[in-house]
Image (cartoon, rainbow over all chains, first blue to last red; front, side):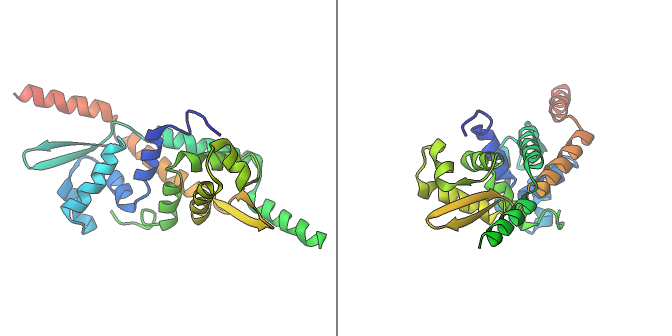
Length: 117
Length: 117
């Protein structure tokens, strides 16, 4: 069960970064163009400090870049994208689709058990 | 920045479940067929208790189903797949691809700054 793809730490950080709705919303917002921390915080009703923590997690995952200009921090997408996340998910889905329909499998198994009794 | 897709809690749990290499390895293994906790633990060198914690997180995310037969817990994929994870990632990638090449954007911005000085 050990391979290079599975143990690739940036992939861990990317999936963890995506596990929060505020962080996904920040990525979606930055997909429409750069924004300051204040601009990102406004629609969430979150404090600047709270929002900054989320941005820091996205930054650690390489999904967001920030630059400070005076007292204002500007946020941009990148340098990384979600290619590795997408590759893992699609490879998994192909395995899943190829192998079996999981609901049917569970039903078949339960049927088998009932017939045995 | 608020919409139903972004605030869908199962999506949070799915991304969080995928943020660990052992859990991704368990899903890949179960993609090849059902397995017991012992069979899942063996190649990781992890204790049964440790492996069970990972399986529980996958179970809470709906990605794995377990059934206890006597003293043995059998693990299967499902009932959920990664359709919503895949949908979110692909929608995000389309936005990214449509809007701009992020590296070029950063370079252009830096060039603009240099020219101003």
